[in-house]
Length: 69
Image (cartoon, rainbow, N blue to C red; front, side):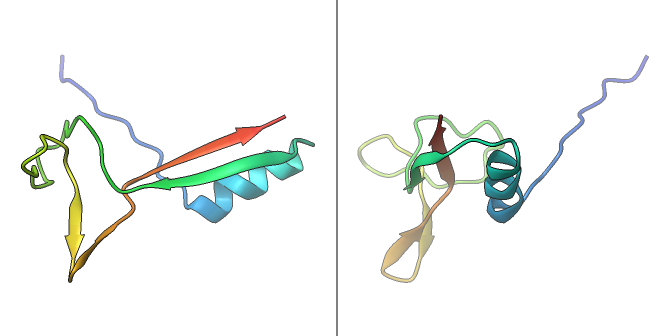
């Protein structure tokens, strides 16, 4: 039997639209530029031990959080 890895990538716009279509109200939408884990081993680790995606002199968001009620 083969190990299968199934992923469903969705854009941030698709996620926000699905939340709103479900009748929820978004209370907070956050961008995060650092994470404690890098399960894919593609992000460089900074001196503080966190993983970030560098872009020029800054970093790109790698995680999003959404709070809806």
